[in-house]
Image (cartoon, rainbow, N blue to C red; front, side, top):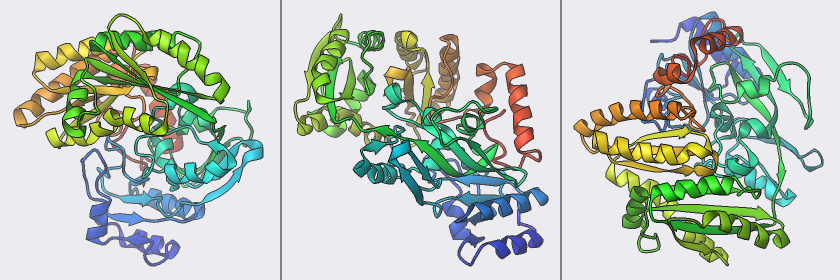
Length: 456
């Protein structure tokens, strides 16, 4: 659809030339994300201030025009695809680190700040922000907050919800508000900060975030354990998480993934039935005992080899299999279906066995790897033709049913977006969904914020 002339004229009064575009080529660049779904927006806005976002949302509400917040488009669920047209609000120019406050262990940032740039800025102060998605060099903090995206370190340090103190945002009414605190403790009313994180831009547009910082550990040790089969590795994960030392990364890679990585990455990738990558961090004098405790738990039936890196070069070599995975998958299936599911850690062996059985039943190639310490598995279906694509979608529905049966949930860090919303009734009761719709209506009474996402 074409935006009403009155709306365009009003928007242009708030946005300087080059900050609002209806040019076809530029609109195409904001029509898709890493889900490979696409739909053309009617305009793209590049705000630089909170006040511009307030004005934009208020005007779009007046004309009942959809508003879609966008970070850098790295999400895999179609959460930033403008399915109903409207205005995409790209936060790439709101990329200032407003302040770093080591005394209070916080940083105040705008949503367009890249995760990797923030980590670099925090280094001289001896701190880091724990959420570390694989895409951290090019994903934005705002996008991390929108989907509650985390990464390997979540197992020890938590997700964005546990590492964000407060937010400034604009609701679907066009009204700006603040929530949360600048303090590490707070018990004042409802926790709107945690509510907005993971809401995928359906409740409000985040314009500023107050992030909780963590001191950077001075020591890190990396281990790699290979196992006879995926079941043995999954059981080892449960043992590791049942002992007192919490690893800062615990990654699982199945046999199919290892073979792909070896074909792509060479002989440095081991041949095994499954593999765990394990890291522990802390002060140097505590690391030997931590390594020993985790190693004891990693040993057990089915262990083939346990290696502990002694140098930075050895650490890099041990991680080679994990780094080779993504490009290896793309060579087999440009249309891979990339899902992340979560189960209680103790149920991980059942999930791994169940996925193997479903891959065989549907005759679909499935690669499983991910953040095993959280029970968060990335299940990648790799269809190579139309027939396999059709079988993959039938298989995926059964994967989700299996996850729910194991007391798990549909996503750990990718979010729901467009791709998983039809499966939400599997995971949530009708009464729960009804309450969520009421919350949505309170923040966005006219339903203009990111329509067609998250809630079925």
